[in-house]
Length: 307
Ligand code: RIB
Ligand code: NA
Image 1 (spheres, protein in one colour):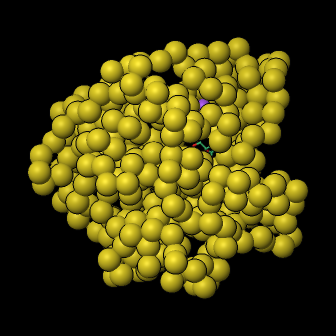
Image 2: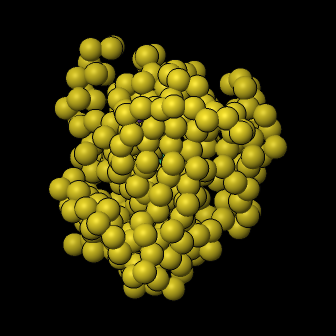
Image 3: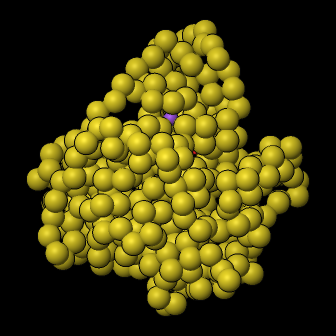
């Protein structure tokens, strides 16, 4: 049987360096702790959903290199169905250059590499997986025409479409109209709606614009303030947890993967957000992307200890 949850997105090798302060243009700073860590928004969300108990298939492209081969292996160890993880000849796996500053903040430069090969053409053999799934989760590190095609096919087949619109970019109304749930942060919400999101009221206004474009459920993450959710049943701010940040890389990805995993197990949207806040909070206390994503036991314990 096909997995009930499909994640479509990127795979990156994150080249991570810790610095005291980010270099300014023209400046050189000395960092430490260089590591290559599994990342990419798609892979991070797939791994989070899998570690948190979802039955999931991943659609992605990796390069014809050691890192790509290692990733397919690691996805399988996390219980991810990888028949639609394609190896692209002649291209390296996607990369991200990540600097992490002392307060846990990051600065990231990415290059798509093999992720750019996830074209509508390459995807065609896997459309059946999307049509048969209950839920599809995507981000914006894959070609936009692929995301548009997949959202349309999923909508027509009755598969629920969730888009985490990261990294930030403007999107066509025709894509927004096919989304069941969108999960922007403040910056992404502003880029999509023109509303500067600083307060709960601003979030409500931005959500209103997105509802007007046909998105049923708008979930805007507001950093430490929590997550603002808006849909026909009403609006609500659901608070998160306060932790001392070590590295915020992939906190949003952990949140999204946890959210869909929890909903897949029958949790209400509100319960799923609470669970996702717990998972994301743990990830922020650890270095790296996939290295920071917790297990189901860890999240359950964290939520119990902090309630
Ligand atoms: O969201 C975090 C991810 O963004 C990192 O793992 C990096 O690969 C970039 O894509
Ligand atoms: Na982290």
